[in-house]
Image: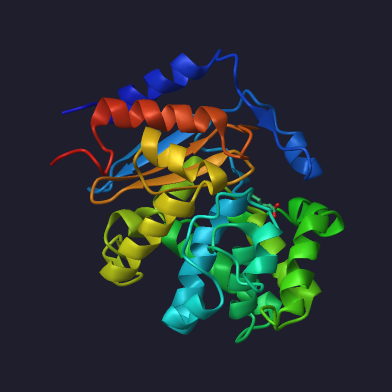
Length: 308
Ligand code: GLN
């Protein structure tokens, strides 16, 4: 049996002095302050054992990884009705792109690009006040991770609220098509608070257990098996924006990245994996995070395309 702790410690060591670490996001000022030398990894196995390496206990801004949890909550609230307002196709465009919205009548390609996640927030606000939706999200990730210390970094949320001009443009543009129903400021405030969730690799990998376990986490059913399968499918096809094809090619796992440098990846039935390295590639995905996952799957055979 592979010693996963030793394996990820080895990967962390190999990547410690990597030259090409990518660039830390600077369009959200607090994120620019995070040193690019940080590196963490956590693997939770199907039997519940947890393996960590590097800075796996340090919370970081999960950013777009929150789109997975927001989608899960929205599907729980309105079910497949959601798909009238957001698509399920990879965009092939940048995470904050607006171009497709014009020809596609304000319907974003998928829930994992900014436009799609903003619609998902609007759907949640069809039933809840922003404060309640943010509270629901916080309770949800705390419960999934089994950790009540998870919090939202208000400094990050505020920084996004002060800047975030592209997101404001996206939301207003979709509103013009009738695909944002609530107040744009409230929808975005909710979206920014979701993005500002701060979690460590350990907490994130724990929170991803329901996607590893066919919808079951720690003995509790979170979503149906079918829904878990579908969320994983969306992560595989759309989780890395215009870099999703390459992620599937190199890593072969459902995964979702965020501009904080985190990636949540799922090996169904085997492991829930989180990795964090703040430097990003040109598509806004963690440069070393992807490399670490590539090495992990090469050495474990965890790609979903591996014959079993
Ligand atoms: N909060 C970020 C934004 O809206 C999330 C982007 C990301 O992680 N790719 O720009």
